Amino acid sequence: MSLMTPFLKQTATLRRIATGPDSWGNYTYSTSSISCRFEKLSKLFRNTEGETWTSEAHIFADVELREGDEIIYGGETREIQKISHVPGLGGQNTFWEGWL
Image (cartoon, rainbow, N blue to C red):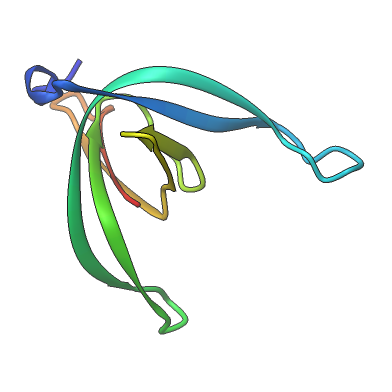
């Protein structure tokens, strides 16, 4: 639980690759319901190779988010492209931000 937990009033589905790819290139996914704050927000990013991409949404959560995870919210599925985390006072990660 983080200091942001009381502000996470929305619910989304986190879809994470559990296993794969198999011999046909298929993945197995695990899904879970998470409390979050989902915002439609545009932000421009530049990667280390100099390529740019635009984030169309932003999510805050108190569960671990990973690049490549998918968020299903409002009937739309979006892939997490970039993440950052905020450590708690004890040094452990307690709060994640993801750009979709």
